[in-house]
Length: 196
Image (cartoon, rainbow, N blue to C red):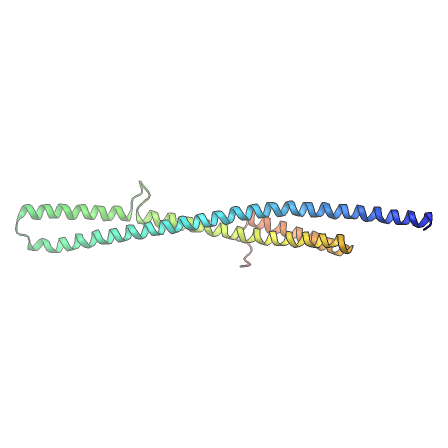
């Protein structure tokens, strides 16, 4: 091997080494973006699960309040119907007082703004939790798509080092931009794009 061929080989090796460093940097940057999208995705998934549990608990509480209200109303109506059969004035007055208490209790079961535990307030809180769950779920799907784009980008960039095909590096960069786009959609406008 002559001096000229040795210099060409060294220049080619140096150029390949520089190119590989650029690809390694691209892989590192994409891996960083992947870490962000995975972290955001996991947080959204956890929030979605927590809000789903919260909504389920609130709807169960709503059902319990509705059942209690129905029972109290039924007993109150039954007592009102039986008032005609009571001859004693004192017993009739006591029963009337009890009926009024049951009606107040039934109304409290329907609406209790002070505690937020009336069936109307529980339904409102449950719907709010469902909305938060749906928002977190939408974010999660976009972060998952971003993560997939970043992972495929890393694979293609790695393949560039092995094959030397620079087209794979360009595709990898485009996938990274796509992943950034899905991450941004997840952060700022999760309902803007509906893929699932």
